[in-house]
Length: 116
Image (cartoon, rainbow, N blue to C red; front, top):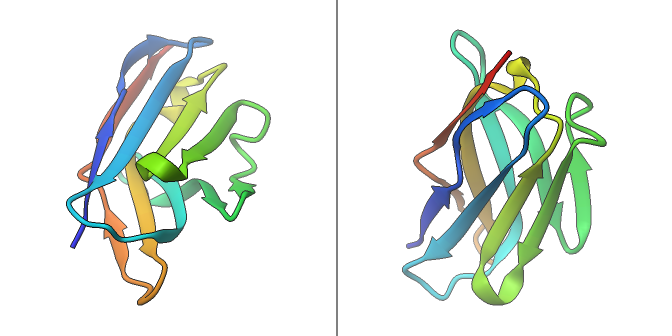
């Protein structure tokens, strides 16, 4: 088993920046993919960005503003969020897919609020 722990959320003004971090702990599992999803009030959870084997994938709405990075040695994934907009307000969830069995893990979520 692994636990994903997110940090870095908060309140920021439009145009500002935040950096989210997520570390997988509690096991020696390796993950074939790690990423970030978000869920705004009244909306479905949606993909923000994923990284797998050095390949990255972004939602169209965040391309050019957000950057995902991963430190495999630390089992940590980061999301640098720049030029934040009020519509980026959501709970951001870390996601990891275990390499061997494909089990999916989720973090508890971290709130990001962007004021206009």
